[in-house]
Length: 155
Image (cartoon, rainbow, N blue to C red; front, top):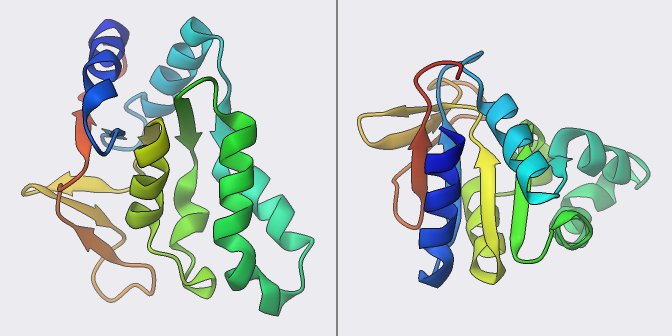
């Protein structure tokens, strides 16, 4: 599976939005696959929840939504290896208090460099879903500008 992901990363170099989302059920190996990719590429995975959360926690509550985009951009520059950025644990981006559009934010990062991120939701009927209808963080996106990489099981 890592070889297929590496091939896809090479193929997206010349398209406008270079965003690959690792999609699959919980426990299917998305994080392990991303870690293996980081190891092969000599890169590091940005744990968005941990590092963005830590930076935002140092700001006054009212400043967090205003600074979240800028802080994320700074962190992405720190974590990117060449033109490749690896992201995991992106759930914080869906926090309604931050007033972000998580997929749009990922797509904007993917204009400058290739981005591989673990999608914390599911791919259902050709749509990316995060949370359930009625949940405050619910999101439903089409696949435009995204290359989904579906993972069926560990391995």
